[in-house]
Image (cartoon, rainbow, N blue to C red; front, side, top):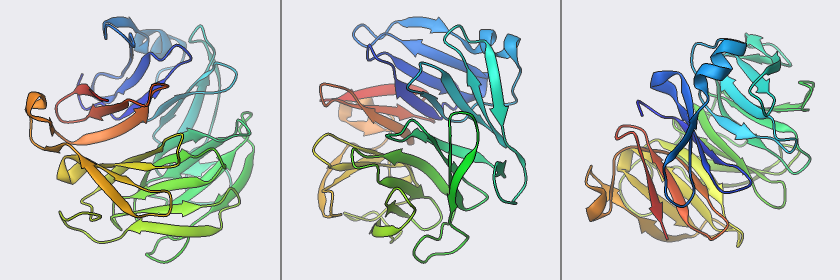
Length: 267
């Protein structure tokens, strides 16, 4: 893989990866890790895109991808259904860089706009339901929001590369807390946090991309532990630009490394 950016799991636990550098979406088997399919060519044949950033599967089994200034939806046969979004900073479905993508508990699409410094919630049909945030470092302000996820209480977690923190909001966009906020290499500090995921117990795992590690926090933001160290030798527990991450049904941490173009599984 070349500069992969996003990873998600399907109902069987297989890994779906946006292989951004090769304009592809690859599916890997959850147990033997073999390549099941390369669906990028099928998607491109239906409706071409310049690049694919994040990839998720919605509650109806549709493939949803963020691509530059729009979000695209394909059915389970990889046929194009519809897209929403244009380049811009105005209200509604306008994006400067639709980067992070998640599905909330209602099945709506949550989109982090990296250059637009805001988070938007859309219905599966592309209707804008909510939009919040502006450039800055205060509450409900963002500086390069990159990754986004939703927990089992429908709270929204956003990683901010520019502010080196995770911002937690409720489902209506009201501020709950910050995690981090200091650039550095110590516990609880970040260098370009790129992705976040919340496990079944409410613990928060953050891809600390610039530091080559995953940091784990309690749900109230207290530092718990670190997974991995910076480097390119996975056998030594090293990570090379961890860009995205998910947690499988067994609680394993699945880490996508952008620079190395590979996946690591941590139990």
